[in-house]
Length: 159
Picture (cartoon, rainbow, N blue to C red):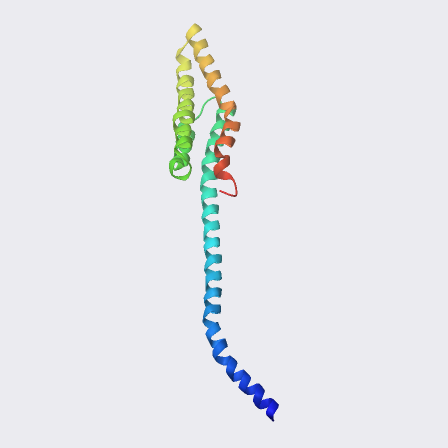
């Protein structure tokens, strides 16, 4: 009987120790769960930002494709580009936002103006118009690589 009584008294002596350890263990588990939730939320934010940034990139890429494959752009195509890239300054940086509005938009709009004016031109004026249109199209040809370089930082998985 003494063995059982010694064992029981030892177990009773451990109860306060185990009770004291229970609170820190629960706190550690709660901290671990909170950390995992924070990581999950951070990754969700990255994914959401990626989707929105990629939509801007895709709109720019589609504009380049349309310029290179069509004689001219419709007003709807230009307005779609403008609408889909309007958030660029909030999602990316000011440099890319200016590139999209000051360079891509302006050149696409200029190309449309040149194309519209061409029916009223003849001779040297018409040739100059065609030269300017070619120059803009050549610029757009080079923009696929430029787009990739500008957006790479924002479309990487680690960002």
